[in-house]
Image (cartoon, rainbow, N blue to C red; front, side, top):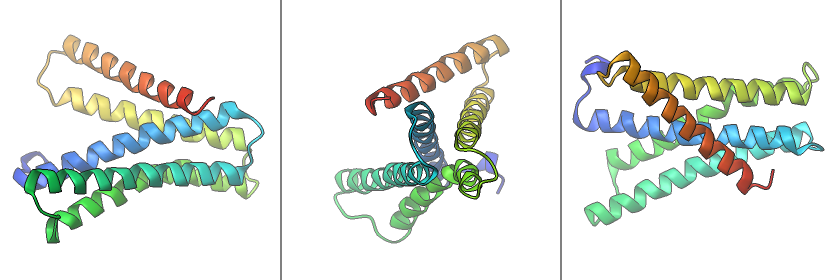
Length: 170
């Protein structure tokens, strides 16, 4: 079965994983931007902040799915349901891969911290732009409507990232 013909539980699993990736990517973007603007942070502190932040959002997503399942189905998720929830959370952790790799290059002295943070920001922003463009391309809207929808979605993503940045006092 191709990705375009996914139905039922498989489609719901893919949608859930995509949502988690978006949450984690926006969170990572805000963390990286906060670190870049904070000054006086070390590479080690930056790695710690990114890893803990992405882990926290992935764990929160997992807990939210379990609680929502319990409320909606009146039972704790079991078997495949629980495995899908766990897999979705683990996939969200992967959003930190490229920014973390850049920070590890900085840890090894191959690039400086600011360059690593900028690489992470650019990668996360590019991922979000790609997801938004893909989402609008799949809607069947006219090109002008897709452009407007994409602009609005990217504006909302930027607003969320700025709100997260402000919430962390940077």
